[in-house]
Length: 300
Ligand SMILES: [Fe+2]
Ligand SMILES: [Fe+2]
Image (cartoon, rainbow, N blue to C red):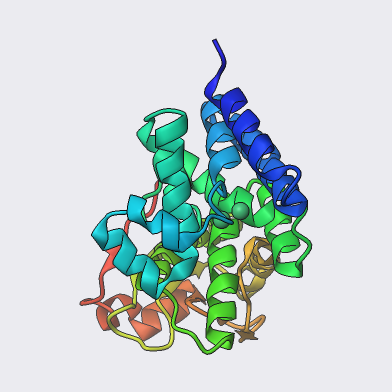
């Protein structure tokens, strides 16, 4: 029996190969990237290929004629955001022509900017669309590199940041769901980053590490990481490890108090303060921040 991905390949080849060569090549590029990522994430490769091959099926359909296949609610949404037509219609045609796998259907339907809590397959199709090898914009190349480095959440976060940026530069309003997804991945990436910052501090034997959630308290940053060391020399030794995290997206804006008893590193939304034990007890940070929620730190 013909597999769903073979069927999708046949359908898309017949529909686009001779009429829209560039789009056809893009689709094959998405398929290649989706297959690569599916293998890494342990997702069914046939499903990933099927969704990838069908994701832009309706790109050139006559919307006036085709929108009758969409629910009233979808039609209303697409009228306001016409770039969604092709995704919703492609999902419809997947169901009509190939099968009823809900994960494949959703991966096609939400491929333009995703949604919070996406399945692995949904994430794969969305980010493969942005990073496949035929995409030559700098932002796509940057995200492709992140993917090949295994930093998939960071790639998704950045791809959303760049696409929202383009929307704003065109003086248009981003879709509210797109902003929601962006914030969802921003938080995910930040959570991962906080873990990495804590690991960097542990590498230089920092003690009594506390992560404060400052979202409600400060308009300037979201997280304050506090740690203690035994000596001033030790207080600066974590800087190198933090600088390594710049490859993972950490933005170090300013370092203060290098080689003193209080080193402060401003990393935009995360601020790291490393004190000598004496200095920390002098400031009585714990008392000062008594009402601020703490984030649980994994014990080694
Ligand atoms: Fe698309
Ligand atoms: Fe696409």
